[in-house]
Image (cartoon, rainbow, N blue to C red; front, side, top):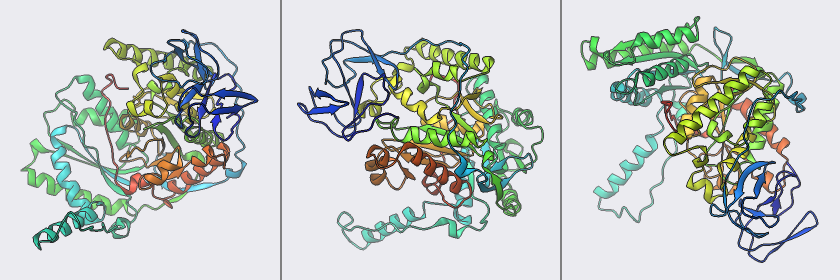
Length: 550
Protein backbone atom coordinates (compact mmCIF):
# COMPACT_ATOMS: atom_id res chain seq x y z
CA UNK A 1 0.00 0.00 0.00
CA UNK A 2 1.31 3.40 -0.92
CA UNK A 3 1.36 6.88 0.56
CA UNK A 4 -1.62 7.50 2.81
CA UNK A 5 -2.72 11.07 3.53
CA UNK A 6 -5.86 12.34 5.10
CA UNK A 7 -8.18 12.98 2.17
CA UNK A 8 -7.03 10.73 -0.69
CA UNK A 9 -4.93 7.68 -1.34
CA UNK A 10 -2.77 6.71 -4.31
CA UNK A 11 -3.08 2.93 -4.27
CA UNK A 12 -0.20 2.12 -6.65
CA UNK A 13 2.61 4.32 -8.04
CA UNK A 14 1.48 3.60 -11.63
CA UNK A 15 -2.14 4.68 -11.00
CA UNK A 16 -3.55 7.76 -12.75
CA UNK A 17 -6.47 8.10 -10.33
CA UNK A 18 -6.75 9.06 -6.67
CA UNK A 19 -9.31 7.56 -4.26
CA UNK A 20 -11.28 9.83 -1.94
CA UNK A 21 -11.08 8.73 1.70
CA UNK A 22 -13.83 11.19 2.66
CA UNK A 23 -16.46 13.23 0.85
CA UNK A 24 -14.76 15.96 -1.21
CA UNK A 25 -16.42 19.08 -2.63
CA UNK A 26 -16.32 20.58 -6.12
CA UNK A 27 -13.70 23.32 -6.33
CA UNK A 28 -11.70 21.86 -3.43
CA UNK A 29 -7.92 22.06 -3.82
CA UNK A 30 -6.39 18.65 -3.07
CA UNK A 31 -2.67 18.65 -2.39
CA UNK A 32 -1.03 15.29 -3.02
CA UNK A 33 2.66 14.54 -3.49
CA UNK A 34 3.41 18.24 -4.06
CA UNK A 35 0.79 18.48 -6.80
CA UNK A 36 -2.49 20.44 -6.65
CA UNK A 37 -5.74 19.00 -7.99
CA UNK A 38 -8.81 21.25 -8.31
CA UNK A 39 -11.90 19.06 -8.19
CA UNK A 40 -14.33 19.60 -11.05
CA UNK A 41 -17.25 18.05 -9.12
CA UNK A 42 -18.15 16.47 -5.81
CA UNK A 43 -16.21 13.26 -5.17
CA UNK A 44 -17.96 10.99 -2.63
CA UNK A 45 -15.81 8.90 -0.32
CA UNK A 46 -14.63 5.66 -2.01
CA UNK A 47 -14.85 7.16 -5.50
CA UNK A 48 -11.97 8.11 -7.80
CA UNK A 49 -10.93 11.24 -9.66
CA UNK A 50 -8.43 11.62 -12.47
CA UNK A 51 -4.93 12.96 -11.84
CA UNK A 52 -4.55 14.35 -15.37
CA UNK A 53 -6.60 15.12 -18.46
CA UNK A 54 -7.72 11.94 -20.22
CA UNK A 55 -8.36 11.70 -23.95
CA UNK A 56 -10.86 9.26 -25.47
CA UNK A 57 -9.29 5.80 -25.51
CA UNK A 58 -6.66 6.56 -22.85
CA UNK A 59 -5.90 3.72 -20.47
CA UNK A 60 -7.04 4.04 -16.87
CA UNK A 61 -4.71 2.42 -14.36
CA UNK A 62 -5.55 1.43 -10.77
CA UNK A 63 -3.83 -1.07 -8.47
CA UNK A 64 -1.06 -0.86 -11.08
CA UNK A 65 -3.11 -2.61 -13.79
CA UNK A 66 -5.40 -1.63 -16.67
CA UNK A 67 -8.95 -1.30 -15.31
CA UNK A 68 -10.71 0.72 -18.01
CA UNK A 69 -10.52 3.16 -20.88
CA UNK A 70 -11.77 6.72 -21.17
CA UNK A 71 -14.88 7.00 -23.32
CA UNK A 72 -14.55 10.74 -23.91
CA UNK A 73 -12.35 13.63 -22.89
CA UNK A 74 -12.15 13.76 -19.06
CA UNK A 75 -10.53 16.76 -17.36
CA UNK A 76 -8.17 16.47 -14.43
CA UNK A 77 -10.10 16.43 -11.15
CA UNK A 78 -13.23 14.88 -12.66
CA UNK A 79 -14.93 11.90 -11.08
CA UNK A 80 -14.74 8.42 -12.62
CA UNK A 81 -18.23 7.29 -13.64
CA UNK A 82 -19.87 4.56 -15.69
CA UNK A 83 -20.45 7.18 -18.41
CA UNK A 84 -16.82 8.22 -18.88
CA UNK A 85 -15.12 4.88 -18.06
CA UNK A 86 -15.64 1.43 -19.52
CA UNK A 87 -14.11 -1.87 -18.47
CA UNK A 88 -10.83 -2.93 -20.06
CA UNK A 89 -8.26 -5.53 -19.07
CA UNK A 90 -4.96 -6.78 -20.41
CA UNK A 91 -4.81 -10.10 -22.31
CA UNK A 92 -3.13 -12.93 -20.41
CA UNK A 93 -1.06 -15.98 -21.22
CA UNK A 94 1.40 -18.38 -19.64
CA UNK A 95 4.99 -17.20 -19.48
CA UNK A 96 7.52 -18.81 -17.21
CA UNK A 97 8.32 -16.28 -14.50
CA UNK A 98 10.73 -16.94 -11.68
CA UNK A 99 8.44 -15.49 -9.02
CA UNK A 100 10.16 -14.62 -5.75
CA UNK A 101 7.82 -14.32 -2.79
CA UNK A 102 8.76 -12.06 0.09
CA UNK A 103 7.34 -14.01 3.00
CA UNK A 104 5.87 -12.02 5.87
CA UNK A 105 7.40 -12.24 9.32
CA UNK A 106 5.28 -14.97 10.91
CA UNK A 107 7.53 -15.51 13.95
CA UNK A 108 4.78 -14.22 16.27
CA UNK A 109 2.63 -17.21 15.27
CA UNK A 110 5.26 -19.95 15.07
CA UNK A 111 4.44 -22.78 17.45
CA UNK A 112 0.90 -21.50 17.97
CA UNK A 113 -2.00 -23.95 17.97
CA UNK A 114 -5.78 -24.03 17.87
CA UNK A 115 -8.20 -26.45 19.51
CA UNK A 116 -10.03 -28.41 16.85
CA UNK A 117 -11.75 -31.72 16.18
CA UNK A 118 -9.31 -34.33 14.90
CA UNK A 119 -10.72 -36.68 12.24
CA UNK A 120 -9.44 -40.18 11.52
CA UNK A 121 -7.92 -39.14 8.17
CA UNK A 122 -5.66 -36.58 9.85
CA UNK A 123 -7.65 -33.46 9.02
CA UNK A 124 -8.80 -31.11 11.77
CA UNK A 125 -12.18 -29.40 11.93
CA UNK A 126 -12.93 -26.05 13.52
CA UNK A 127 -16.45 -27.24 14.42
CA UNK A 128 -18.35 -30.47 15.06
CA UNK A 129 -21.58 -30.65 13.05
CA UNK A 130 -24.17 -33.28 12.21
CA UNK A 131 -25.30 -32.83 8.61
CA UNK A 132 -28.66 -33.57 6.96
CA UNK A 133 -28.70 -33.66 3.19
CA UNK A 134 -31.41 -34.56 0.64
CA UNK A 135 -30.50 -36.17 -2.65
CA UNK A 136 -33.49 -34.38 -4.21
CA UNK A 137 -35.62 -31.30 -3.54
CA UNK A 138 -38.66 -33.51 -2.87
CA UNK A 139 -37.23 -34.18 0.60
CA UNK A 140 -36.85 -30.52 1.59
CA UNK A 141 -40.16 -30.46 3.43
CA UNK A 142 -39.19 -33.49 5.51
CA UNK A 143 -35.90 -31.78 6.31
CA UNK A 144 -37.81 -28.70 7.48
CA UNK A 145 -39.99 -30.78 9.80
CA UNK A 146 -36.97 -32.56 11.26
CA UNK A 147 -35.04 -29.30 11.61
CA UNK A 148 -37.80 -27.64 13.61
CA UNK A 149 -38.09 -30.64 15.90
CA UNK A 150 -34.37 -31.08 16.56
CA UNK A 151 -33.44 -27.40 16.73
CA UNK A 152 -36.23 -26.50 19.13
CA UNK A 153 -35.76 -29.43 21.47
CA UNK A 154 -31.96 -29.66 21.47
CA UNK A 155 -31.19 -25.95 21.85
CA UNK A 156 -30.07 -24.95 18.35
CA UNK A 157 -32.94 -22.64 17.39
CA UNK A 158 -32.30 -18.90 17.12
CA UNK A 159 -35.89 -17.91 16.37
CA UNK A 160 -37.27 -18.25 19.90
CA UNK A 161 -36.81 -14.53 20.57
CA UNK A 162 -38.95 -13.66 17.56
CA UNK A 163 -41.61 -16.17 18.57
CA UNK A 164 -41.69 -14.50 21.97
CA UNK A 165 -41.84 -11.07 20.33
CA UNK A 166 -44.78 -12.14 18.13
CA UNK A 167 -46.50 -13.69 21.15
CA UNK A 168 -46.21 -10.39 23.03
CA UNK A 169 -47.60 -8.48 20.05
CA UNK A 170 -50.57 -10.87 19.92
CA UNK A 171 -51.20 -10.47 23.66
CA UNK A 172 -51.10 -6.69 23.36
CA UNK A 173 -53.56 -6.79 20.46
CA UNK A 174 -55.95 -9.15 22.29
CA UNK A 175 -55.88 -6.83 25.32
CA UNK A 176 -56.84 -3.85 23.17
CA UNK A 177 -53.44 -2.19 23.31
CA UNK A 178 -51.90 0.02 20.62
CA UNK A 179 -49.52 -2.27 18.72
CA UNK A 180 -48.07 0.62 16.68
CA UNK A 181 -47.11 2.84 19.62
CA UNK A 182 -45.92 0.19 22.07
CA UNK A 183 -42.28 -0.76 21.70
CA UNK A 184 -41.86 -4.39 22.71
CA UNK A 185 -38.28 -5.46 23.30
CA UNK A 186 -36.81 -8.57 21.74
CA UNK A 187 -35.34 -10.72 24.49
CA UNK A 188 -31.98 -12.14 23.51
CA UNK A 189 -31.38 -15.78 24.38
CA UNK A 190 -28.02 -17.52 24.34
CA UNK A 191 -28.91 -20.77 22.63
CA UNK A 192 -25.48 -22.17 23.36
CA UNK A 193 -26.24 -22.42 27.06
CA UNK A 194 -29.36 -24.49 26.34
CA UNK A 195 -27.73 -27.18 24.22
CA UNK A 196 -28.22 -30.78 25.24
CA UNK A 197 -25.03 -31.80 23.44
CA UNK A 198 -22.34 -29.20 24.25
CA UNK A 199 -19.73 -30.76 21.94
CA UNK A 200 -22.07 -30.71 18.93
CA UNK A 201 -21.78 -27.23 17.43
CA UNK A 202 -24.86 -27.57 15.27
CA UNK A 203 -27.24 -29.71 13.26
CA UNK A 204 -27.14 -28.46 9.69
CA UNK A 205 -29.53 -28.94 6.76
CA UNK A 206 -28.58 -28.62 3.08
CA UNK A 207 -31.92 -27.79 1.47
CA UNK A 208 -31.55 -27.33 -2.28
CA UNK A 209 -33.59 -27.34 -5.51
CA UNK A 210 -31.70 -30.02 -7.42
CA UNK A 211 -31.35 -33.77 -7.77
CA UNK A 212 -33.96 -34.26 -10.48
CA UNK A 213 -35.67 -32.46 -13.34
CA UNK A 214 -32.55 -30.69 -14.57
CA UNK A 215 -29.75 -32.05 -16.72
CA UNK A 216 -27.83 -35.15 -15.70
CA UNK A 217 -24.76 -32.92 -15.49
CA UNK A 218 -26.56 -30.86 -12.82
CA UNK A 219 -27.28 -34.02 -10.82
CA UNK A 220 -23.68 -35.23 -11.19
CA UNK A 221 -22.28 -31.89 -10.03
CA UNK A 222 -24.69 -31.81 -7.10
CA UNK A 223 -23.65 -35.34 -6.13
CA UNK A 224 -19.99 -34.33 -5.96
CA UNK A 225 -20.92 -31.22 -3.98
CA UNK A 226 -22.94 -33.17 -1.40
CA UNK A 227 -20.12 -35.72 -1.14
CA UNK A 228 -17.70 -32.87 -0.45
CA UNK A 229 -19.91 -31.60 2.38
CA UNK A 230 -20.33 -35.05 3.90
CA UNK A 231 -16.54 -35.43 3.82
CA UNK A 232 -15.90 -31.95 5.28
CA UNK A 233 -13.59 -31.86 8.33
CA UNK A 234 -16.21 -29.90 10.29
CA UNK A 235 -18.81 -32.66 9.78
CA UNK A 236 -18.90 -35.60 12.21
CA UNK A 237 -21.96 -37.48 10.97
CA UNK A 238 -24.49 -37.44 8.14
CA UNK A 239 -28.18 -38.25 7.61
CA UNK A 240 -29.24 -38.67 3.97
CA UNK A 241 -32.88 -38.42 2.85
CA UNK A 242 -33.79 -39.76 -0.58
CA UNK A 243 -37.09 -40.10 -2.41
CA UNK A 244 -35.95 -43.02 -4.58
CA UNK A 245 -36.80 -42.23 -8.20
CA UNK A 246 -34.69 -39.07 -8.72
CA UNK A 247 -31.72 -38.56 -11.05
CA UNK A 248 -29.28 -38.30 -8.16
CA UNK A 249 -29.40 -41.82 -6.78
CA UNK A 250 -27.94 -42.66 -3.38
CA UNK A 251 -25.48 -44.98 -5.11
CA UNK A 252 -24.14 -42.10 -7.21
CA UNK A 253 -23.62 -40.05 -4.07
CA UNK A 254 -21.88 -42.92 -2.26
CA UNK A 255 -19.64 -43.59 -5.26
CA UNK A 256 -18.58 -39.92 -5.37
CA UNK A 257 -17.97 -39.98 -1.64
CA UNK A 258 -15.79 -43.09 -1.90
CA UNK A 259 -13.85 -41.57 -4.80
CA UNK A 260 -13.25 -38.40 -2.81
CA UNK A 261 -12.24 -40.21 0.38
CA UNK A 262 -11.78 -44.00 0.21
CA UNK A 263 -11.25 -44.00 3.99
CA UNK A 264 -14.52 -42.24 4.83
CA UNK A 265 -15.69 -43.68 8.16
CA UNK A 266 -18.12 -41.18 9.66
CA UNK A 267 -21.55 -42.42 10.78
CA UNK A 268 -23.88 -42.30 7.77
CA UNK A 269 -27.67 -42.78 8.02
CA UNK A 270 -29.65 -43.25 4.80
CA UNK A 271 -33.47 -43.14 4.52
CA UNK A 272 -35.38 -43.64 1.27
CA UNK A 273 -39.00 -42.51 1.38
CA UNK A 274 -40.37 -44.76 -1.37
CA UNK A 275 -39.16 -47.75 0.61
CA UNK A 276 -40.51 -46.48 3.94
CA UNK A 277 -43.67 -47.62 5.70
CA UNK A 278 -44.96 -44.03 5.75
CA UNK A 279 -43.69 -40.46 5.80
CA UNK A 280 -44.32 -40.31 9.52
CA UNK A 281 -42.27 -43.43 10.11
CA UNK A 282 -39.46 -42.09 7.91
CA UNK A 283 -39.28 -38.89 9.95
CA UNK A 284 -39.47 -40.71 13.28
CA UNK A 285 -36.71 -43.13 12.26
CA UNK A 286 -34.50 -40.31 10.97
CA UNK A 287 -34.92 -38.33 14.19
CA UNK A 288 -34.32 -41.33 16.43
CA UNK A 289 -31.25 -42.65 14.62
CA UNK A 290 -29.78 -39.15 14.33
CA UNK A 291 -30.36 -38.60 18.05
CA UNK A 292 -28.32 -41.72 18.76
CA UNK A 293 -25.62 -40.41 16.42
CA UNK A 294 -25.56 -37.09 18.25
CA UNK A 295 -24.92 -38.93 21.50
CA UNK A 296 -21.84 -40.50 19.93
CA UNK A 297 -20.31 -37.40 18.30
CA UNK A 298 -20.91 -35.45 21.51
CA UNK A 299 -18.16 -37.63 23.01
CA UNK A 300 -15.61 -35.94 20.72
CA UNK A 301 -13.60 -33.11 22.26
CA UNK A 302 -11.42 -30.33 20.93
CA UNK A 303 -7.69 -31.00 20.99
CA UNK A 304 -4.62 -28.98 20.14
CA UNK A 305 -3.59 -28.76 16.47
CA UNK A 306 -0.91 -26.76 14.60
CA UNK A 307 -1.96 -23.75 12.54
CA UNK A 308 -0.94 -25.52 9.34
CA UNK A 309 -4.06 -27.68 9.81
CA UNK A 310 -6.22 -24.64 9.01
CA UNK A 311 -7.79 -24.10 5.59
CA UNK A 312 -9.19 -20.59 5.21
CA UNK A 313 -11.30 -19.40 2.31
CA UNK A 314 -11.19 -15.68 1.48
CA UNK A 315 -14.29 -14.02 0.04
CA UNK A 316 -15.70 -10.53 -0.54
CA UNK A 317 -19.33 -9.56 -1.02
CA UNK A 318 -21.25 -6.31 -0.98
CA UNK A 319 -17.92 -4.72 -1.91
CA UNK A 320 -17.25 -0.99 -1.90
CA UNK A 321 -14.52 1.41 -2.95
CA UNK A 322 -12.60 0.70 0.25
CA UNK A 323 -12.59 -3.10 -0.14
CA UNK A 324 -9.28 -3.19 -2.02
CA UNK A 325 -7.73 -0.61 0.31
CA UNK A 326 -8.58 -1.84 3.82
CA UNK A 327 -10.29 -5.20 4.40
CA UNK A 328 -9.04 -7.17 1.38
CA UNK A 329 -5.32 -6.38 1.73
CA UNK A 330 -5.55 -6.94 5.50
CA UNK A 331 -7.14 -10.35 4.91
CA UNK A 332 -4.48 -10.91 2.25
CA UNK A 333 -1.72 -10.30 4.79
CA UNK A 334 -3.38 -12.75 7.18
CA UNK A 335 -3.52 -15.21 4.28
CA UNK A 336 0.19 -14.77 3.61
CA UNK A 337 0.94 -15.37 7.29
CA UNK A 338 -0.97 -18.66 7.23
CA UNK A 339 0.74 -19.77 4.01
CA UNK A 340 4.12 -18.96 5.59
CA UNK A 341 3.08 -21.22 8.49
CA UNK A 342 2.19 -24.09 6.14
CA UNK A 343 -1.59 -23.67 6.02
CA UNK A 344 -4.00 -23.50 3.08
CA UNK A 345 -5.72 -20.44 1.57
CA UNK A 346 -8.55 -20.66 -0.98
CA UNK A 347 -9.16 -17.74 -3.38
CA UNK A 348 -12.22 -18.21 -5.59
CA UNK A 349 -14.77 -16.05 -7.48
CA UNK A 350 -13.25 -16.34 -10.97
CA UNK A 351 -15.40 -13.49 -12.45
CA UNK A 352 -13.70 -11.27 -9.86
CA UNK A 353 -10.19 -12.14 -11.03
CA UNK A 354 -10.75 -10.43 -14.37
CA UNK A 355 -7.83 -8.09 -15.04
CA UNK A 356 -5.42 -9.71 -12.59
CA UNK A 357 -5.09 -13.02 -14.44
CA UNK A 358 -1.53 -12.32 -15.58
CA UNK A 359 -0.34 -11.62 -12.05
CA UNK A 360 -1.84 -14.89 -10.81
CA UNK A 361 -0.47 -16.84 -13.78
CA UNK A 362 3.01 -15.42 -13.16
CA UNK A 363 2.75 -16.59 -9.55
CA UNK A 364 1.85 -20.14 -10.62
CA UNK A 365 5.04 -22.19 -10.94
CA UNK A 366 3.38 -25.32 -12.30
CA UNK A 367 2.64 -24.84 -16.01
CA UNK A 368 -0.22 -27.36 -16.01
CA UNK A 369 -1.92 -25.53 -13.15
CA UNK A 370 -1.46 -22.18 -14.90
CA UNK A 371 -2.95 -23.55 -18.11
CA UNK A 372 -5.85 -25.04 -16.15
CA UNK A 373 -6.55 -21.59 -14.70
CA UNK A 374 -6.42 -20.01 -18.18
CA UNK A 375 -8.80 -22.67 -19.53
CA UNK A 376 -11.30 -22.24 -16.68
CA UNK A 377 -11.26 -18.44 -16.96
CA UNK A 378 -11.60 -18.26 -20.74
CA UNK A 379 -14.27 -20.97 -20.90
CA UNK A 380 -16.28 -19.35 -18.11
CA UNK A 381 -16.14 -15.88 -19.67
CA UNK A 382 -16.97 -17.23 -23.14
CA UNK A 383 -20.00 -18.99 -21.72
CA UNK A 384 -21.15 -15.70 -20.16
CA UNK A 385 -20.59 -13.79 -23.41
CA UNK A 386 -22.53 -16.40 -25.38
CA UNK A 387 -25.70 -15.36 -23.56
CA UNK A 388 -25.07 -11.62 -23.87
CA UNK A 389 -23.19 -11.14 -20.62
CA UNK A 390 -19.53 -11.34 -19.62
CA UNK A 391 -17.23 -10.72 -16.68
CA UNK A 392 -17.37 -6.99 -17.46
CA UNK A 393 -21.00 -7.01 -16.27
CA UNK A 394 -20.07 -8.31 -12.82
CA UNK A 395 -20.31 -5.13 -10.68
CA UNK A 396 -23.71 -4.79 -9.02
CA UNK A 397 -25.60 -1.48 -8.65
CA UNK A 398 -24.43 -1.38 -5.04
CA UNK A 399 -20.80 -1.89 -6.10
CA UNK A 400 -21.03 0.91 -8.67
CA UNK A 401 -22.75 3.31 -6.28
CA UNK A 402 -19.88 2.85 -3.85
CA UNK A 403 -17.08 3.41 -6.34
CA UNK A 404 -16.45 0.10 -8.15
CA UNK A 405 -17.03 1.37 -11.67
CA UNK A 406 -15.59 -1.53 -13.73
CA UNK A 407 -15.14 -5.22 -13.16
CA UNK A 408 -11.38 -4.85 -13.44
CA UNK A 409 -11.39 -2.32 -10.58
CA UNK A 410 -13.54 -4.65 -8.50
CA UNK A 411 -11.35 -7.62 -9.39
CA UNK A 412 -8.03 -5.92 -8.75
CA UNK A 413 -9.23 -4.99 -5.28
CA UNK A 414 -10.86 -8.38 -4.71
CA UNK A 415 -7.67 -10.28 -5.55
CA UNK A 416 -5.86 -8.48 -2.71
CA UNK A 417 -7.54 -10.80 -0.19
CA UNK A 418 -5.53 -13.71 -1.61
CA UNK A 419 -2.26 -12.12 -0.55
CA UNK A 420 0.96 -12.36 -2.53
CA UNK A 421 1.99 -16.00 -2.04
CA UNK A 422 2.76 -18.27 -5.01
CA UNK A 423 -0.21 -20.18 -6.42
CA UNK A 424 0.20 -23.80 -5.32
CA UNK A 425 -2.80 -25.29 -7.12
CA UNK A 426 -5.85 -24.56 -9.29
CA UNK A 427 -9.10 -26.38 -8.46
CA UNK A 428 -12.26 -26.82 -10.44
CA UNK A 429 -15.61 -26.65 -8.64
CA UNK A 430 -15.91 -29.32 -5.86
CA UNK A 431 -12.27 -30.42 -6.18
CA UNK A 432 -10.59 -30.70 -2.74
CA UNK A 433 -7.62 -28.59 -1.69
CA UNK A 434 -4.74 -30.96 -0.94
CA UNK A 435 -1.66 -28.77 -1.30
CA UNK A 436 -0.37 -26.34 1.30
CA UNK A 437 -0.34 -22.73 0.18
CA UNK A 438 -2.65 -20.63 -2.00
CA UNK A 439 -5.14 -22.42 -4.26
CA UNK A 440 -7.42 -20.81 -6.86
CA UNK A 441 -10.92 -22.34 -6.74
CA UNK A 442 -13.35 -21.98 -9.65
CA UNK A 443 -16.66 -20.58 -8.37
CA UNK A 444 -19.00 -17.77 -9.39
CA UNK A 445 -18.73 -14.37 -7.72
CA UNK A 446 -22.24 -14.79 -6.29
CA UNK A 447 -21.76 -14.68 -2.53
CA UNK A 448 -23.57 -17.87 -1.56
CA UNK A 449 -22.49 -19.92 -4.58
CA UNK A 450 -18.89 -18.89 -3.83
CA UNK A 451 -18.98 -19.72 -0.12
CA UNK A 452 -20.74 -22.99 -0.96
CA UNK A 453 -17.88 -23.83 -3.33
CA UNK A 454 -15.14 -22.83 -0.88
CA UNK A 455 -16.54 -25.14 1.77
CA UNK A 456 -16.67 -27.93 -0.83
CA UNK A 457 -12.95 -27.39 -1.47
CA UNK A 458 -12.33 -27.89 2.25
CA UNK A 459 -12.34 -24.44 3.85
CA UNK A 460 -12.75 -24.82 7.62
CA UNK A 461 -13.11 -21.03 8.10
CA UNK A 462 -14.09 -18.30 5.65
CA UNK A 463 -12.98 -14.67 5.93
CA UNK A 464 -15.71 -12.64 4.21
CA UNK A 465 -15.01 -8.95 3.60
CA UNK A 466 -17.83 -6.49 2.94
CA UNK A 467 -18.22 -2.77 2.47
CA UNK A 468 -21.99 -2.63 2.20
CA UNK A 469 -23.00 -5.41 4.62
CA UNK A 470 -23.86 -8.97 3.59
CA UNK A 471 -25.79 -11.32 5.93
CA UNK A 472 -24.30 -14.52 4.52
CA UNK A 473 -22.98 -17.66 6.15
CA UNK A 474 -22.44 -21.34 5.42
CA UNK A 475 -23.89 -24.49 7.03
CA UNK A 476 -20.59 -26.26 7.80
CA UNK A 477 -17.90 -23.58 7.58
CA UNK A 478 -17.92 -20.67 10.06
CA UNK A 479 -17.94 -17.36 8.17
CA UNK A 480 -16.18 -14.35 9.69
CA UNK A 481 -17.39 -10.94 8.46
CA UNK A 482 -14.76 -8.23 7.99
CA UNK A 483 -16.00 -4.66 7.41
CA UNK A 484 -14.06 -2.29 5.16
CA UNK A 485 -15.21 0.78 7.06
CA UNK A 486 -16.26 1.67 10.59
CA UNK A 487 -19.59 3.24 9.56
CA UNK A 488 -20.73 -0.17 8.35
CA UNK A 489 -19.29 -1.97 11.37
CA UNK A 490 -21.21 0.31 13.72
CA UNK A 491 -24.44 0.28 11.69
CA UNK A 492 -24.56 -3.51 11.22
CA UNK A 493 -22.73 -4.67 14.31
CA UNK A 494 -25.07 -7.65 14.60
CA UNK A 495 -23.46 -9.24 11.53
CA UNK A 496 -19.91 -7.79 11.52
CA UNK A 497 -17.06 -9.47 13.43
CA UNK A 498 -14.01 -7.36 12.53
CA UNK A 499 -13.71 -3.66 11.61
CA UNK A 500 -10.77 -2.61 9.39
CA UNK A 501 -11.85 1.04 9.22
CA UNK A 502 -8.80 1.97 11.28
CA UNK A 503 -6.72 1.43 8.13
CA UNK A 504 -8.69 4.12 6.29
CA UNK A 505 -8.17 6.52 9.19
CA UNK A 506 -4.44 5.79 9.25
CA UNK A 507 -4.60 4.41 12.79
CA UNK A 508 -3.39 0.90 11.91
CA UNK A 509 -1.30 -0.59 9.16
CA UNK A 510 -2.42 -3.41 6.91
CA UNK A 511 0.13 -5.68 8.58
CA UNK A 512 -1.16 -4.89 12.07
CA UNK A 513 -4.74 -5.49 11.00
CA UNK A 514 -3.76 -8.71 9.24
CA UNK A 515 -2.20 -10.06 12.40
CA UNK A 516 -5.37 -9.19 14.34
CA UNK A 517 -7.45 -11.04 11.76
CA UNK A 518 -5.32 -14.18 12.08
CA UNK A 519 -5.59 -13.98 15.88
CA UNK A 520 -9.38 -13.85 15.51
CA UNK A 521 -9.27 -16.88 13.22
CA UNK A 522 -7.31 -18.87 15.79
CA UNK A 523 -9.92 -18.08 18.46
CA UNK A 524 -12.81 -18.87 16.12
CA UNK A 525 -11.17 -22.15 15.08
CA UNK A 526 -10.88 -23.06 18.76
CA UNK A 527 -14.51 -22.26 19.56
CA UNK A 528 -13.46 -19.41 21.87
CA UNK A 529 -15.29 -16.90 19.64
CA UNK A 530 -18.51 -17.65 17.76
CA UNK A 531 -18.74 -15.55 14.55
CA UNK A 532 -21.96 -13.61 14.10
CA UNK A 533 -23.03 -15.62 11.04
CA UNK A 534 -22.83 -18.79 13.14
CA UNK A 535 -24.73 -17.22 16.02
CA UNK A 536 -27.51 -16.23 13.63
CA UNK A 537 -27.65 -19.63 11.89
CA UNK A 538 -26.93 -17.99 8.54
CA UNK A 539 -26.67 -21.37 6.83
CA UNK A 540 -26.77 -20.30 3.18
CA UNK A 541 -26.25 -23.03 0.58
CA UNK A 542 -26.68 -22.65 -3.19
CA UNK A 543 -25.20 -25.30 -5.51
CA UNK A 544 -23.75 -23.97 -8.76
CA UNK A 545 -25.16 -25.70 -11.84
CA UNK A 546 -22.14 -24.60 -13.89
CA UNK A 547 -24.32 -22.14 -15.76
CA UNK A 548 -23.68 -18.42 -16.16
CA UNK A 549 -23.49 -16.82 -12.73
CA UNK A 550 -21.41 -13.75 -12.04
